[in-house]
Image (cartoon, rainbow, N blue to C red; front, top):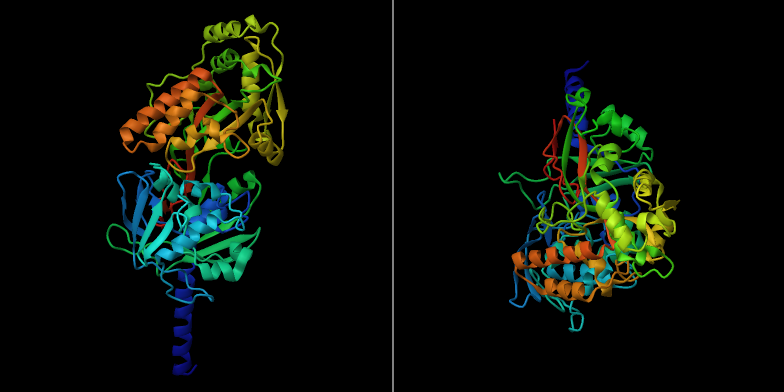
Length: 535
């Protein structure tokens, strides 16, 4: 072989090798989304399946860290007026949208982009499920509460003070998007997302695979000044069967799985919730409180059911053992909900708040107060749930039968069930509430009388004038310590009137391969990948 040809071949092999090295699995973070992904438009990021990929592609004014603390993001700083109604955000000037064929390269983010992005949320033509976030804006002003003072300064005006507003702005709904790209693609923006995030969309074969690649122009660095993200990409698969997903994880084809499905729960975990010994050298397990309260809800103003009786609701709350339920049915994943509705993981949560613990004598006492001694004369109560929670409901059914409360379980499909709950058509139902942002107001708003379903999240139709006054006072209280005290008082009213049966405060549980580093759990179960690296 001529020397020149040999040199060319050697260089080609070297270049090929380098190319292969860039694509090696240790640079790509791989996970599965069993429920599929319907859109990558942040205006529709209403579920975790969408929030996870959208959070890699987009940024907002502020962001949440692993400790659910709010930090600067595209806004490097901000000031809040003394009355809590006016926010001035000072934007970074080094943030650019991903390169694209519509706006080209190096399209800088300016304040007017946020005006457009937030107005887009409450535009009826968008039909965003996040439109409610903009109810806080003072839309009576000429600029509807949003004004770009200059390219790097944004003003937001609220109709009344709301201390949780920064948390609202951290939600993916409030991500910045480029107007010209959204208008060019229209509804097809769902599959042509252009943001500012640490990754950009490389390809998406719906139902098969979604690939994100590293944004080399990303604006954030780590604490040592190194550019983020570390990973070259993210690959998402769409295996619908959870058992198959687990097998792929065991083979090392997936880097992590979130939660634990009944099909492999006992394979991975001991009854006490620890990782079984045989897996400790193969995978990592991490846990943290999850801002999710699992509960049973009553339609308290039902005209056809005994659940309108407060004492009966309290008897049900005292009538079963939450600790035993978690041990036998969930391998102790979670914490018994014995302190009220606001979950563990929020600052206003307090172990000093006394909720409902298992107590047969108390259950019998309140059952008699309700007018049904030992259950005599009490009609059978229907509890509606989905198939995923039948085991929990059957456990409660058995426990309550021993004190004279008869429960029948009605299993509904997911879509039908959600519609029935959202329109307050069920007398007794299983529910869960996952925080949209890390503030107890997000939980307590479920019982504010002005939030009656179907236009609000008060599915129980609970109404209490004292509760409403305290809730409104908490909304305008800017002192964190005082506001948290008010939140605890609100939780005590819920315990007294018992519109719900808190079951447990959930936990985030993740299993990851041993070569995954800087992969932290968090109380919002967000997927933070900027600082993750693989060996």
